[in-house]
Length: 309
Ligand SMILES: [Zn+2]
Image 1 (cartoon, rainbow, N blue to C red):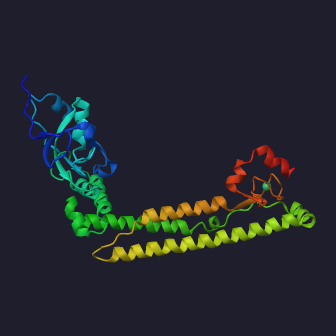
Image 2 (image 1 turned 90 degrees about the vertical axis):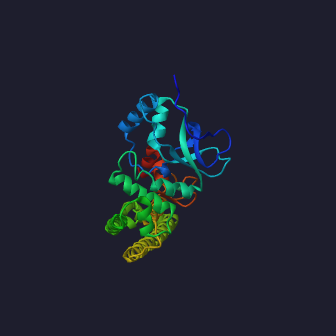
Image 3 (image 1 turned 120 degrees about the vertical axis):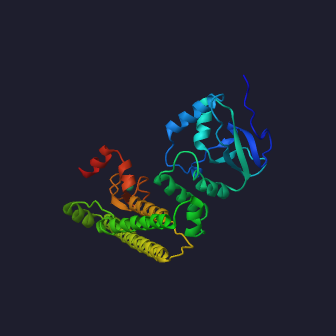
């Protein structure tokens, strides 16, 4: 059987730039360099069949790989995910590739620019993903250059950014509605128990006072977070209004992180007088006399109810 002669030198140890034959085990499929919203299984199957039957099929163009340096263990596949998956399916151990040296950022930018001319036709989801990639790789670049690198129009990029802002604003609206959420709920003792315990036990009165202070502090923090969120969204909107955006605030991530801070505060806030010691102080409540929701949930049900009786 006449084997088709492949172009390029085989990469055995050190990488070199240009066309080479690369062992598949040295190829890295990194999610950050995947400019396809979805792998097209039909295309993979079709390519795999072609690769298995080289007599009747024209070889596919080489894939593109970026490597950090000549000694790199693996290289990033920036164009050719379908071909790599097909090669694996066809049981091949190597593939022709065009190798370039570059940083991880270079690789991300190259991935964003990939798939414009050949291969499986890009969907709008693919285009959105490639714009996302290029913005992550080159956050300080301009809309014009992002659009050029991804092979989309400027309007496409603007619309994408505008849509993001809208989502962020909608998120903020939802945030500002449930105001009562900002105040941690305190499971109060019923009036009678409270009156009698306050009367008979100054310790309980002290614990109640501390719980009130902690709750007030938590509320102050929630207000601060709400203010920060507003400022972020306003700054982002001002940014979007500029025709030439040079900076990019990752609003979505910041708002999510602030949300995480809120739940941390909520979980650690006073929830109830410690049902284990009844406010006297024990290991469970760390001698505070009260427990947070998290701690409360850790106490076995029998023990919680045992105190209430
Ligand atoms: Zn306790």
